[in-house]
Length: 83
Image 1 (tube, rainbow, N blue to C red):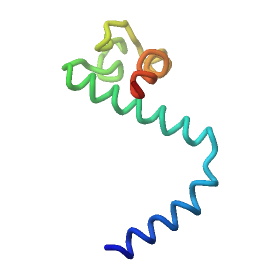
Image 2: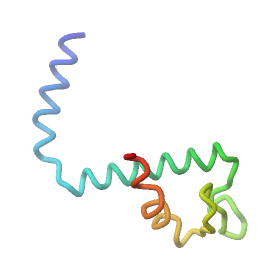
Image 3: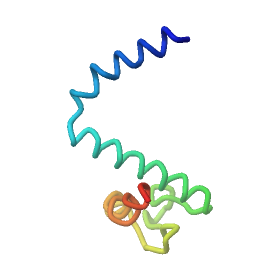
Image 4: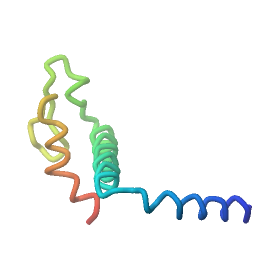
């Protein structure tokens, strides 16, 4: 077990300096998106892609459709992931 941990730490030390700010931003965006999808599921709400009209209502009350969902999640819910 200690060998696995030591191997992970060595690999992480080699990998981390290669990460860019864009890499971290993408990770945060993906994390917010996943949390949002689970929150929609937990609220019993369909995603716009699960609606025949392509429209839905976010758990926060905002009307969303396939064209604005990504921007809505980023603008309205991404910062709340870090609170």
